Image 1: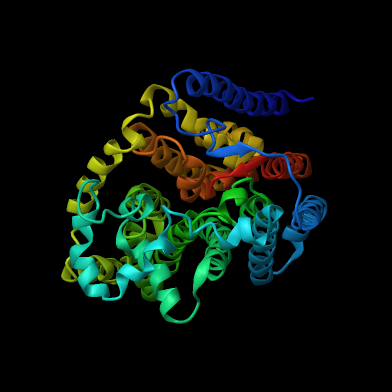
Image 2 (image 1 turned 135 degrees about the vertical axis):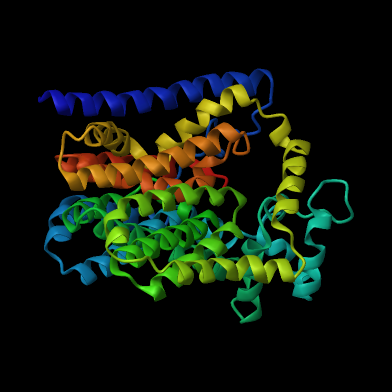
Amino acid sequence: MTRSLRRDLYAAGAAALLVTVAVLIGRHIQDTRHTLFVHWPPLFADWDPHVGPGTPAALAVASATVAYGPSVAVRLPWRVLLAAAWASALAWILSLALIDGWHQGIAVRLTTRNEYLTVIGRFRDIPATLRDFTHHIVSGTPDPWPAHIAGHPPAATLTFVLLDRIGLRGGGWAGMWCVTVGATGCVAVLVALRALADEALARRAAPFLVLAPAAVWQGTSADGYFAAVAAWSVALLALALTCRSHGCAAASGLLFGLTCYLSYGLLLFALIGAAVVALARRELRARPAPLLSLLAGLAVFPVVFTLAGFDWWQAYHLLVTRYYQGVGGTRPYGYWVWADLACAAVITGPATAAGLRRTTTALLGRTGRADTRLALLVTAALLALLVADMSGMSKAETERIWLPFALWLLPACALLPRPRAWLTAQAALALLLNHLLLTGW
């Protein structure tokens, strides 16, 4: 065994140790103080060993990706690879969700009491509801919004309102929207990697983006949809700066604006955007960037929502009040500030822990230029995640909340040798999670 591989295993082992400690200490805190408000800390889940209709499909997708993913990713034409990555990610997310069955795994996930579909009827007059939105964020106000509606800007709920308006009603359609759109997130990351690093690294990352343990939650929450929108804003920014495309610049700005109105915390994607700008500085020196197109696209959603009467900053400050009125004010920061990182280790898997170790070497310039550029992008995502962690506004449930950041940590796996062994570990973790636990999202 080489020294480098041994260090990779140490990194994966350290991640596993972190998760184990978070489980043991979390169980003790919850059993004695009852302040974590999760049944299987650090995850929002219940111990429930089971199999379901998705089990054979999940095993088949995992086996095929491990056996053929690395070699197929190298040989396929680029555009065919992108389509194959989306289809494979969709199959993986969907099969994992169906381990819990169609009803429990997809159809009712967004219909429970804190979820978006419970308030569809309150959006009959959308402009009036937006004007009145902030009046119902804080607990104690008349008809306060359920937790997830209060905890997000209105574009999140409006997505499902608009689906309902066009006839795609109910939890099944809403769930499939999140699964189908969420699966495109891996394609966006591949597009960005090719533009900013090189195609070979993107191809090596593809199987890991498809077979991520994060897929357990991508199929069960709206955060997978948010992650895809955020990822495409970054990918289109990379294309805009490297290809001088005004269309991509406008689309990137538009999607980043939408991202900020889907989730307050995703404003931190500006850090990843800044890394994209830094990586494209050579192209920026050669020719002016399509800055005006970017700003024009970026302004659309803030202007529309502001004119409609929704004040983003006011709503965020009211959300902070609401957060500390609920379990967020009781959950101990001293535990979650590090246990949330254990959740991140779970959704990104042991391969990512090993890949992050290798990004350190790449950042020190001990590998190729493309590796260094990939490492800078991954480091920006890690920095954004750490800022979110330190804020204290993400205590618990980060296995779904941090899906947007997790997508940008997974490319670190492209730096690993022996991809099939690491892919096996990733798949095994996801399958064990979904068959042993019943996740809350």
